[in-house]
Length: 100
View 1 (tube, helix red, strand yellow):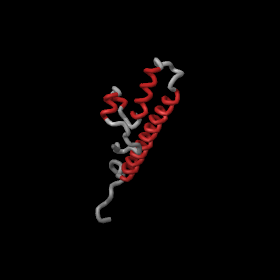
View 2: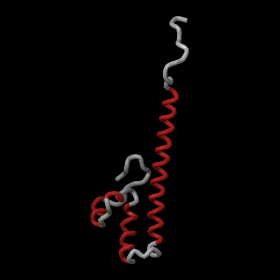
View 3: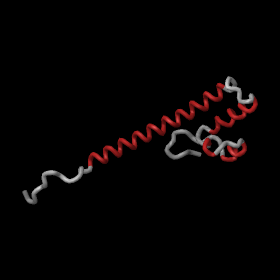
View 4: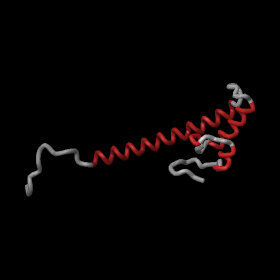
């Protein structure tokens, strides 16, 4: 399953995410990494020095998604700025004379 506008594919299925009780807000292209991270966290009683490798991989995935979205938004803003600059700006101060 591929998400529109993203280079990463969804690896975890809806059934897997429901079974792992992944909240809706976290069901993105990195959810397949969150499932084992949450299992590790529960097994280790959420100790902050445990599951560091899993957390690092998950946070790196999320960071890459954010950076990808930022680049896409920057491209959109540049396209809008280019389109805006090509349009005539307001009313001209010196009117064009017909047939001159």
